[in-house]
Amino acid sequence: MNLNSIIYKFHNSRNIQEKRKLKPILENISTYGYKSSQIYASYGEDSAAIQLKPTSKDLILLTTDAILPIFIEKSPYGAGFSAIYVGIDDIFACGGTPLACSITIAYNDDKMGKEIFAGVLDATNVFKTPLIRGHTTTDSPTLSISSTIIGTTTVDHFLSAGGSKSGDFLAVVWDHEGKSSPINKNYWNTITMKTSKEFYHKRSFLSPAIENKFITACKDISNGGILGTLFQMMQYAKLGAEIDLEILESHIISDDLQFSTEEFIFMFLTSGFLISGKNETKDKLIGLVHEANMNFYEIGIVDERKEIRIKHGNNEEILLEDYI
Image (cartoon, rainbow, N blue to C red; front, side, top):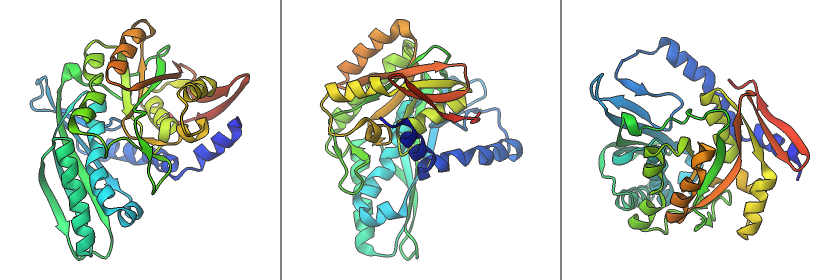
């Protein structure tokens, strides 16, 4: 395995570059934006958390996302469906339950508009999340879809993406029952063929794992892949990590998967979560994950070195440093 090739691909990925460009933008917002004591968590989290009152234990979760125009053009139905899905797992990753959604759509072709809305409405039924607000432009010169998902949780059940501690294990929890998208081979689709019952069962490990403090941080694995998601988690935790690609490779080989380790670490894994946790409760967590019919791949460890390293056998390279 060529570690330098992986490092090159990581640093030249548009998705990774976009995530790295967020740092100065967020710093500017933090410096000049208005503050409120009712904002329990915001930047860096998969979902912002808002307290109903400054002393309330109940939290409203809110997350927003946008779909790339090229995806909308190639698959209007898939783009509409994905616009709702991408925020749903953001809510789950923070320990929440989806409550409702809103969407903004712009197009200039009625057939395309109908396909987009078919995807949106099918998604609301699969995820049992009603569409309650939105804005539609039917004569737009450009294509766009953006969505907001609202959820609920409590202060005691909120899980931060930056909660990892030095010495924690790192693991990927993901649904192997899926297929690569015909539009994008790096998109692992586990959603469109699942019923609501199956979808929610796959995520049933999260609530007891959070309640029993089996996991210290969680983030859904999206277009940055495992490495992009790890970069964000460690940036928010202000810590470093080491990923053992040989161990990950052994998981992939033993499960007879259809892709290589290098392909897997850059894939958008729908129904995929990167988690950290304590070694003393790992076995109990694995039991919950398997009961949910999900795969558990331990891939590394969190440490204090403020850099992200990848290794394979006796070879080790720094993937990223100076990101905090």
